[in-house]
Image 1: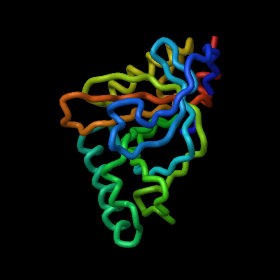
Image 2 (image 1 turned 135 degrees about the vertical axis):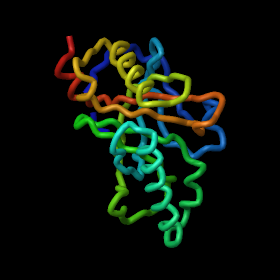
Image 3 (image 1 turned 120 degrees about the vertical axis):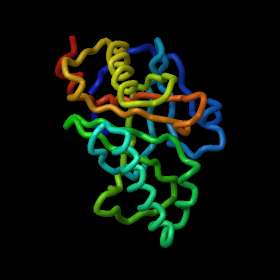
Image 4 (image 1 turned 180 degrees about the vertical axis):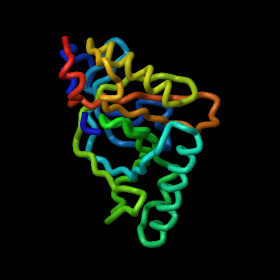
Length: 201
């Protein structure tokens, strides 16, 4: 998710996410600090996190189901030897990460303190260092199309544009089950987005 957006926004708010929003209650989530809020955009600093990820071969629903199955199978096997993975169903968000190579990855957040030594042939262990993301929230049933539209909106809010969204690395974050009546979704763009840097005005 290493993607360079420079943004000069006034420092409006400094706060921790713990207990701040209802959708995070009773869930294990990445710990972050809100550095700035302006015009519907949050600038967040995330502490180091670990994720399980598997590649999604296309945007077809069946391929997302298959990717979810790959992660679920890996976790079920890993639970036999790794303590704490039973808390994985209490973690949010689920990420769909779009890379600058125009690849899609389905990512599950690993609870803090869980020690996984390796992945598998289809599932990778991904460690994300302390990172700063620009975040836009949106509602509605999550989809790749929603993620694309809100990524464009986020880039526009930042005063940036990219002729080809395929070259932008961004992540769609979901905090609810797909069948939920109400959805809290987010799109994240790392402050190191090379595409946005190259085309900034």
